[in-house]
Amino acid sequence: MTQKPTNPTQNAQARAKIESMKRQFESRRAISSSLSSVKTKVGVYSGKGGVGKTTVSVNMAVTLAEKGKSVGILDVDIDCPNVVKAMKIFEPPEIANDKRLIPPSRFGVSVMSMGFFQKKEDEAIIWRGPMVHNAINQLLQSTNWGELDFLLVDLPPGTSDGPLTVMQTLDLDGFVIVTGPQELAVMDAKRSINMIKTLKVDVLGVVENFSGEIFGSGAGEGMCKELKLPFLGRLELSADYRDESKPTVLISDSVRDEYKAVVTQMELQLKNKVSS
Image (cartoon, rainbow, N blue to C red):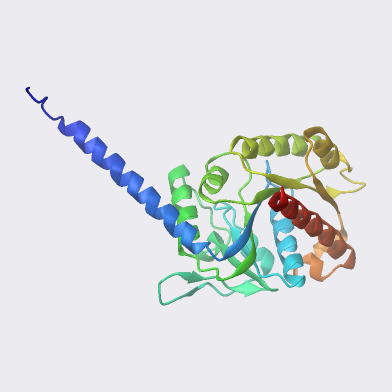
């Protein structure tokens, strides 16, 4: 029987595909190894910017640390990394003997962020999707977190490449959704929730931020009733946030109590998830 002649173009494409699959496998294995000592990974996510997602991430992390938990924040908002500024961290990561990065810490929380690698904090990072994907993977692979009870992942807002990369790459235990009480914020929160559900990841609950007389209140809780999701708590719009010298839970008793309630509800949802 006569063999069909080989097609050099098809052979090259097949080899390229195999090499790509190998790289993806090695990347996933490196990420899994990097996070092997992290007990619980929670994404903090919103459908739009400006609803206070990073503020919520930082104050939740510090609240968990105050409870005696070992905590880290991974800031994967590549375009606008704000966790470093919010945590008032000034020293860069250390480089270990194995060339991996050791995150600096403050207020009992370890932090890794693209913000450490900017020349200027107001520098615009103008990258297309593949570059954002590669940057997120590099942060995930190259960080040595050590033993952590919680890793909070501060995601970029929206439903595009950044959050999609994290959701597909990280085996997250669930998401905390941050919304404002306004109609548009709730609509965008629903979009983010639908994205999470499409990717078969759990929503641990919703936090309503900026609640109070100015923007109103109750829309986040109403959305939870509509979508049959846990409501984790309401965070009041407070003048205490104007003191930016440290996370507000370390300044204000009332804000601390709000975050304690949110964290307690989140831990309860995680516990229920394990037992179900």
